[in-house]
Image (cartoon, rainbow, N blue to C red; front, side):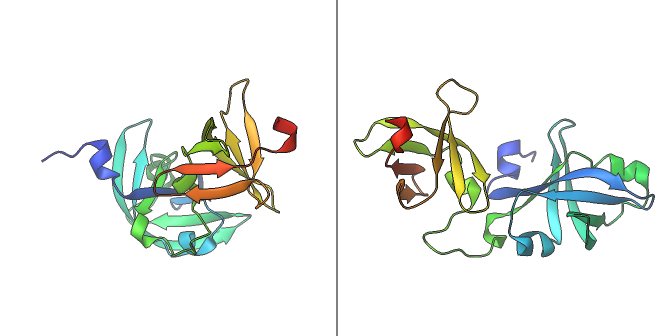
Length: 178
């Protein structure tokens, strides 16, 4: 039975993307989508999916090391730079249940991306398109690439509630938006 893309990626989460090759032995650069190193460093069996080529691969990571701020990985069966190049651009997926547990007041980005954001009066403000990490706090980017783009800092002054399961966030609009 052939599975659809949605079936293959059901309950999977992208944790990184394969970049360029490194060296001649088939090593690849892995650029994480997370700031939690344990997620990347614990990768063993993953699904690689290249959207451009529509190619899936169940891959086993047999070696990983950190080099110049990027992870260098070795995938079983990839022994040369020519084969490694074929994996470039692939997203790295794992099962959601492989993610470390988090506290109730914490979130993974995928849990709040595409959430609807409402003000205190119940008016729809927009949808979360992106989350920017500033170092001191995250910033929600609503309505990206439109004239109505809104940035809301993820701090107690502005975020009243985050309902991850219903993808609904209630905010107090910053003064500069009133």
